[in-house]
Length: 514
Image (cartoon, rainbow, N blue to C red; front, top):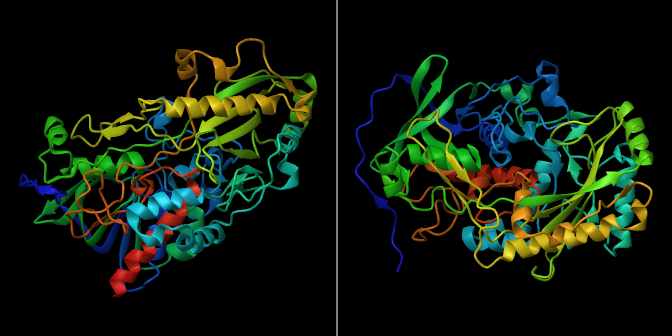
């Protein structure tokens, strides 16, 4: 027997000066927030305020820092936490993580949509989401990898995948295991982020759209099952924004933290954190799912170093431009659960002498069974949340087995004839045969967290929102970002998040018209 979320009498909120009134307030200016603000403000009769904790560098790329625009690097200036564990990295800038990621856009399997539609209804099927994916591809101006960006290494990797028997597939569509190249949101080395695509000068000129940057969403003020305001902190101190609808798009880590600071979440945990519970919703912050991986280092030959150096000098060297969808022995038929990712170029961490480069092949676990969580350390919005990725924590050992399988495929790829003369395997125990402790010590992340405000039917204790992002138990509150996905797709998450934001913006706009 299921039951509705349990409402707890709230403590009286302290008075905070008013900061404006709108029809819709979108909290979080990341990938999803940019889409939502742009789409919802298309109706000139709807006033929209987009709130972003980080800077807004404006609609013109020339006004942005060069490091943020560099598509060949992973910028780390505009992030929430500097010098934090890598799994915690997330953008704090208008455009969010589209300003700090690898500019890759791929799509998951039909099996992903089956999981999502069971939780959220028919609008999440592969067929129903297809038009939103296509709309996002067009608006972001996603493009195929040009030939001049394929290094000697990337070209050899494509040939190696063919040697292993994989067929070429379109990485931007549901399909089958195989190899291919991603779609890119970058042109001639310049990153084209979600703020450029969705909040261009024409969009920003709309009189009904307000972009409020350097403003951190602290907490929602709830009364009688509704949100009466949101307290934000900016340069002028705290203020309250009022709206008819509040849409939370603070990301997989930020959205559950905001809900919990507002009294929405596991009641016992909220009390322990100094927050008076308003709505006992146990799923908030639970179900964190991310994609761990291990890098298999190779030894580059002088010939590979020379080829990479020549491309680097032309400004056309990218560490990776292809990937392979791989199905492990534990993967359902027709799907895939691993990305095998060859890379060669400047190291992601540390540095090498001029003319020397790092080469290797990574295996990333795409469909983990393990789950982590996000919890508050404090009711203070300036204190970062506790984030436990839960990597390889499933008791049955499924995730570890799939990762080992992926690393075995990576090794077979490294041994392909196409790589002869470019790189060699180092001596020692193969990565897929390493002791568990050593394998865990090498663990990295693909940076694709989802699931902490998962969608599902009301009465499901794990569910936070319904299939249109409505928070169970609160009339005028929605969540619309990667946190609503109950499972991570077998893909990089930027394109799926763009599509889900298009979908949920459409759902909100349609309901408002009705």
